[in-house]
Image (cartoon, rainbow, N blue to C red; front, top):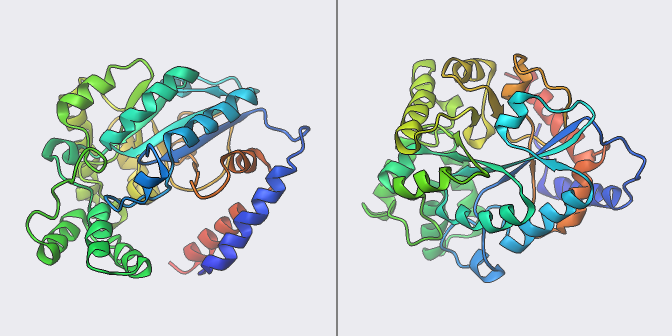
Length: 332
């Protein structure tokens, strides 16, 4: 079931209108909302710099507005450890998550401290250990420099998502040269091992598993899946002295078998890339805690409006997404 970009955009716009009229009487208690971020930018100019794929295009100031919205509405920011220890069934909670392990995530700290808001940072451990750029940033940057259109770049990236990471990187080095995976600077590079160790010591920071090599796990056999997850656990423990309790599946791609492999590696919580509320109470031994839903914010839309939409119980875009998933499952 393929939904056109125009239809999806219209649904999101309608959701924003619904959110703007969000009734104060609507039930929000007994909810854990989780949000996904990638890089953080200092300015719109940095978003447009072309150094890396801007993805959501979220600036530090937008992140501050986002946290302010939920504090004002009485939500409590929580860590994975607090979730595992148990959340009050009638409470309203927010879990902040950052994927990949960008060094620029350090910018989140000053805002997190301002709001006393913990966050979990999911790290692709081999990117940190080897200091290599993320392949989607290479595809975006090199494609732009060679005059490719945004649509051409997006199609290439979607094609790469059907491959294993080593296959993508080999293809990029073949097309753009042996230095293609060398980061340009602090904006696009991952943490170093030393930086990650210091970062992990912050009281508001939790480090999560994002596989060893940002592996889209549905492209790998069961043995390779276990190697990717366990490799991430081992390397993060080696670098930081901490053992992750939570995993974010790269590209949000998971399955019951993959989630079971994560449990066997000692992980107790997992997140996907599917919008929706997580209802409380959570049963820590139940399958759904290994695939918690997450919302995504976009920098080209109003942050407050998107926050209100995530709190609403009615969402046409979430319904559309659910129907698409069901249709896809029916044709497997």
